[in-house]
Length: 427
Image 1 (cartoon, rainbow, N blue to C red):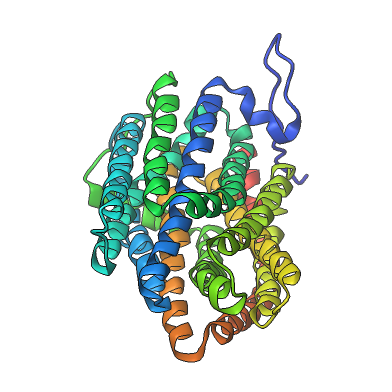
Image 2: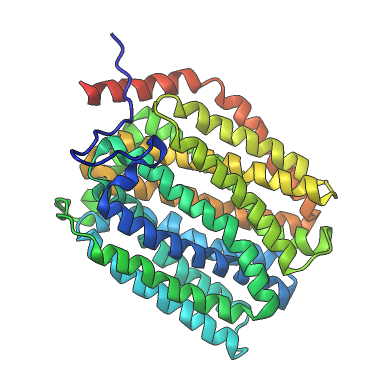
C-alpha cells in the first residue's frame, strides 16, 4: 500500500489548533523568530532597493548594477557550502544573534559613508561583498534553525512556507516604502533603518528557549564532504538543486535590470522602481500562500517545474512591453513563479534531509539559490550593456522556457524519487 506523508500537526492538549496554513505559528519559539524575521526582512528590502537606486543614480551604469549584485551574492556560492559545514559544528542560536549584530554594523557603515558623500563605485562593491559574506552565514543559520524552533518535522514545511511568506511580504511592502523614503529622505536613511531592523530578529532569537541540537563531529572539511556526498548521491536532491540553479541564473536576474526599465524604458524615478519591485513581491507573496496550503510532498515537484515555466512566460511578456499595467502584471507573475520554484524546492530539500545533515543541505540550497542569482545578475548586466536591456530580458526568458520544456521529461522520475524517500521515513 502506498504511503503518502500528510503534513498535518497534532493538536496540543487544551489548545485550539490554528488553521492549517498557519499551524507552525502554534509553536512559541517559532512565533518569536517569525516576529523578528518580519521586521528584519522589511529593512533588508528597503536597503536593497535604496542601494540599487544609489548605484544607478551615481553612475548610470547597468554593468555596475550587475557587478554590485554579483559581489553581494557570489559569497553565497563560494562560502555558503563551507559555512553550512562550519555552523553545523557550533551553537547555531548564538551564532545567529552574533551575525545580526555584524549585519547591523555593515548597514550603519554604509549609511555613514552615504551621508558623508564618501561613497563611490569601489566602496559600493566592497560593502556589497562584505554583506555577501555575512549573508553566506546568516541564511543557512536562519533556515536550519526553523526546524528546531518548530520542533515537529510535520510542521516544518508549513514553517518554511510561512517564513518565505514573510520574506515576500517584505518584497511587496519594502520596495514601495523604499521609494517613498527615497522621495522624502535619502539612501542613507534607508540604510540606517535597515541597521535598526536587525535588532528585532536578534531579540526574538534571544527570547527563544530550546535545547541546542547535537553538533557535527569532525573537521569542517570532513563534515562538508559528508554533506556533499548526500546531495550528489540522492537523485531527487541533486536534480532539485540543478533546477534551482537554472531558474535563478535566468529568471532571478530580472532584479538587476529593473532600475534600467524604471528609468529608461518607462521614464520613471525611484517610485517607479518601487512599484515594479512591489509587483514582483506581491506575486511572490501569493506564491507562498499557495504553498502554505499544500499537504503532499510529491506534489511539490510539479510546483517546482511549473514555477519556472510561469516565470519564463512572464519574462517574455515583460521584455518589450511598454504598458505599465501589463508590466506590473508580468512582474507579479515572475515573482509568483520564482517564489513557488524556490520555496517548494526548499520545502522538499529540508523535509527529505536527515536531521543531522539539514544545516549542510540548507547551505547548498542557499548557495545555489543566491550564488546562481549572482552569476545571472552579472551576465544580465553585461548582456544588457551590449545588446540592450529589453533584448537581454527576452534572451533570459527564451533560455528558461527551453529548459522547462526539457524538465518535463524528468518529472515522473523525480516524483517517484521523492515518494520513495517519504515512504522510507514513514516506515
